[in-house]
Image (cartoon, rainbow, N blue to C red; front, side, top):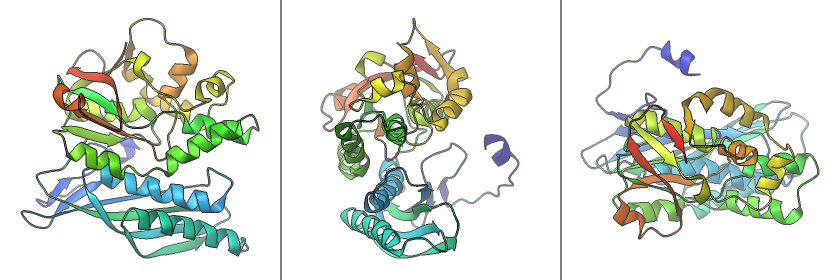
Amino acid sequence: MDRVLAGVPRWPDEHVLVGFDTADDAGVYKLSAELALVQTVDFFTPIVDDPYTFGAIAAANALSDVYAMGGRPISSLSILAWPAKGDVDSLEAILRGGAEKMHEGSCTILGGHSVADDEIKFGYAVTGTIHPERIKANSGARAGDALIFTKRLGTGVIGTALKRGIARESDVAAAIESMLTLNRAAGEEMLRHEAHGCTDVTGFGLIGHAREMAIASGVTIEIALGELQFLPGALEYASAGALPGGLHNNRDFAACAVGAEGKVAPEVEALLYDPQTSGGLLITMPEADAAQFRGGYRMGRVLKRGEKPIQLI
């Protein structure tokens, strides 16, 4: 995709505060000195069996990009691909799950668009608001910052374990609870501190999104492996080989950006690349603010740019 986007023409617009140059979570368009729009879109195929839960997770995932920028979601449009002869009750459940999660996030659904497709896909385009001088972009990380993460890793591996029939019900429930949890509270807590940079960890995994932040900010992000937190069962399922295809793609793309001190356990290394759905916020902020941050845990620091964008210790 990076190669493709490099060939897409771009025209300057002084109102664009954040575009797709740094692979940020959302675009930001300035309307006035005190108001800008945050815009994002995200949709995917079902990742859980229950249609209501799938719709709610899709909504939480789409809202996350606005929270990651420091914005407040205000409206959304649904995006749906549904089989022409698909079950109507399941469709209603998906839409209801999404609607209720959007309501929880104080985001109004204005409408949407649907197409007939044999493969189910669902998500939202979300619009939010933000002050132009209070944007938390992925390019804001500074050397000396602490690195905070607000959720545990492992949703992709647990989802794969579920498909293979080896996941414990309690582990699946914990993963679903994590995916259903809005990043709203984490975003609000971030804004109470002097956060410099932020991104949410989703499909590209922790390494993929940390890499984007490091490159955009011109720094090296150091991840302390001993501080990482994983969802129940994630390490076990990774050891058993329940690795989603996206994990392999993420590793193939981003492994060249990673340096490591010593050997990394294979199951831990795999989860670094695990594609997350509705994952946590990865935030950089001064040490003093990190010590007071609630709802997350410290898992590294930001260094001056070194040989690799990502360093594992």
